[in-house]
Length: 417
Image (cartoon, rainbow, N blue to C red):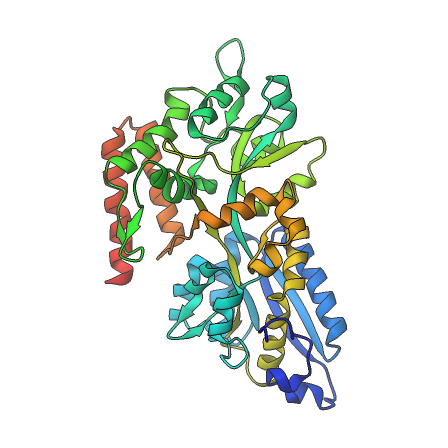
């Protein structure tokens, strides 16, 4: 019997007898996540559903700007304040475990063997010493968004299926003023957004490499594959003139404004794009590499029970965790945020697989890789610096790749060794 399907069954099944035995007051737990409007809206729906099914539990949601979120969590929990259930990026798990901000999910409820049957394999990165520390409601993959109006104006019938076609399509979509300045890019670029994932897990693999070895503890792109990947990426700007890093500040802003023909982003972007007036867009799988290789990157945010949650609050937190990792909750999250269900049973329904927007992301999960970060923000900055060396310092691609690999290896060594 599934670990999640029975989230509403009596408390004896989930070790929370105290909640069902006539408490004089309702138990209130706190849930924290960073602010992203679609995610807040989705969680409001889930909390409402959960409270209706569990009238003895109240869930108070708090959210913070992304830039402040980790600091707020790190300060609150050790002080005995803040959330009982917390949302965190999968790449932060090591930091949260080491700082004792979260506690293992009870193995009698979240049975490891059943999790591994019911969830996509990528969630196994949340396992420590035989127990799961956290679980996602949704997972993400990348896909190619394209502006249907700009495609029609340029006489383009279909999105590109290969990297070669991507370049040719981008050329047709690029617009410049009389002075040669870009007014509309063929494709957005920017390592501060999702392109550092596109470089690592997609382009490096498509050019014949593997970005890391030794279970992501050893950098492995300071070679021909890494050089070809960076040469292709930077070539969109330097050779083909179809893009500009930082165009309109943020890649997604340029696409939303109709000033970019194509944009690579995560499935979480769907909710915001759907609210953009006048934007008609399509979605396609990421273009295949030179030899037809397909690759993708998958990531996810997880929910965990904090070390602050004890007694009745812990029991309530367990019940809440069961609901937010149920098929029902995953479908709500998909419909509201655009992030993909973390379980095949919810993701791979006929309706979802055939959806013209969700479908390409869901298909991308089949060949996606998930980077195991030691320090996600620092490792992202390595990619930003690598590109800057080529663009601004005119460093060779080979030297820039080698310098980046050495910098990132120091980060990994510091963490693992």
